Length: 282
Image (tube, rainbow, N blue to C red):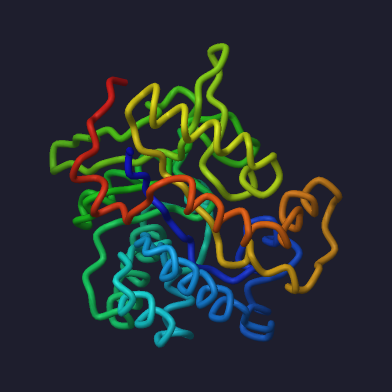
């Protein structure tokens, strides 16, 4: 069986980009923190399934919950960076992005006691408008990035990007890009990578899509989830209808779906799987 890459983006529910206008950053510290209990539930599930994952930790979380980050590392999971403040990269300047990247790395490494060499942008926000971020990641010594989603979406995506792992080369170095996973049907890339797609679409779609990528293309998928996606008791914030469905839809079903997925497919952390990834042609 192909071994797939399981990734968890460790952030609070109110860090989700859909709340950017509804919940000002100045209020973040006043809100109930729910990330630790939800992440601990995921850790227990992964322990039962004997699966390792890559946890992309937000620096903001690492500063406030260093014991949680230490628990993740102590369980044998890979620790990577999700940036510090969950700002969208294409709304940042290169200077602000570099500062955020450094703050996050320092906070996460101080908490975990292990080096950080991987990165995922908040909300997959390395797009055609922010490809300069890849140069900065290479300059800062990152070995891989998992921030580009090869789909059409209203907030992110570069639909023409390669669908499987590929190397990005610059004059000053290189890194691996690990795109969000898709199946290609009728000339269009359709997502099977997790998150809202996993919660809102039938489980059969995700299972069929991962099986297709594994069997027909011989490639692993990169699957992602957030701790808040198994937290059906999180506060409900007033949002536009479509946004409300995207964020709150099927929260109560996600944990059972994930357990089923871990039984149906093999998963490991990025650092383990990427050693055997066959680079796909662009």
